[in-house]
Amino acid sequence: MNTITLHSPDRIDAAAKEFLKACGHIPVIAFSGELGAGKTTFIQALCRAMGVTTEVNSPTFSLVNEYFTTEGNSIFHFDLYRIEDPGELFDLGYEEYFYSGDHCFIEWPEKASHLIPEDALRVEIRVHEDGSREIHF
Image (tube, rainbow, N blue to C red):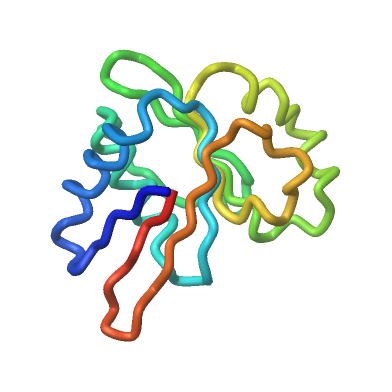
């Protein structure tokens, strides 16, 4: 298991680059952590590191957003926090995203754990009392 410790928010872009280098090209990455742990903020940093120049927002109500890198590659960002039934992902055609080979960043994967590919990289973000974060993967 790898761990990246983030002592201050101004190091998030460096942490994102370190994370991407360490995990290589794993297309589906599932992010867990308590509310406010920084899942969306870290995904924003990952998208910047991958060349996304448009605004990256949590798809809390739409469930999925698509971003494009400067090379034209797609990144899909899922936020499953508000789903009440994992079956809602069937309506989206989740399989087309998860098995496309494109990057899929999934927040709150535990809401539909049986639908997340087995080979997805599982990431847990832990918050410490001093406000630092540990990113375990």
